[in-house]
Image (cartoon, rainbow, N blue to C red; front, side, top):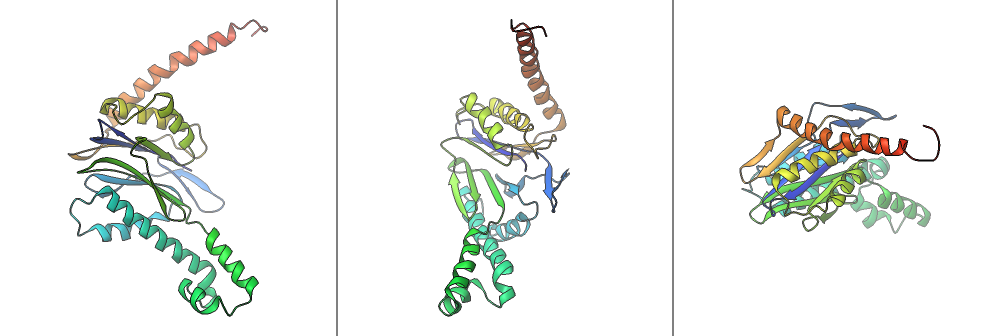
Length: 265
């Protein structure tokens, strides 16, 4: 339950990212806003954001950073591959911890040593659990390399999608409201940086009506110069534009509704 948004702009020369600060943890779920940004820097010009488990990404990103440590200016596709590989490995570890290690097995030994010797119903039951187990994490990767700006997504069971041609994507409980903002504005990667920054902010604000999306916002701009986080003053300017754009519309529509001829208001 969150919102994470990425958009390509300036003809694939830059990208904009935004997220809330809401964290959902434990069971029963507890929601609270956390000071730590959800924007994880994986290179000088690439970030990743996560929706789902508040804890699952920690070890995953540690492995990814270790894998990329010796690579200078990695391509976004290379970073995505590293995330996918770690995602698959972390999911495998979870499967083993939940269903196999308590029985003295690993994923490899289950299929090589036990699948043919155990009763069929037990094998089928364990296999079904393995297939259905989710890592409960979705990752949005936004970055810039010598090929331009890119957006990728990684999700269960460890598959990735590329959103470069679309030019934007969102994950989390507020994704439908965020994505509709881009659709209604006919957004493309040709849009200017200024337009992209505002529209990403508007998409995040619109997503706040969804359950689990926090009111606080972190945003950054990714260019050849690196990753620049928006200041409080810059965020305040975006908020002012948003209020000026939406408040008159709300008031005008409210008056039009009051003027309908179907009864006394």
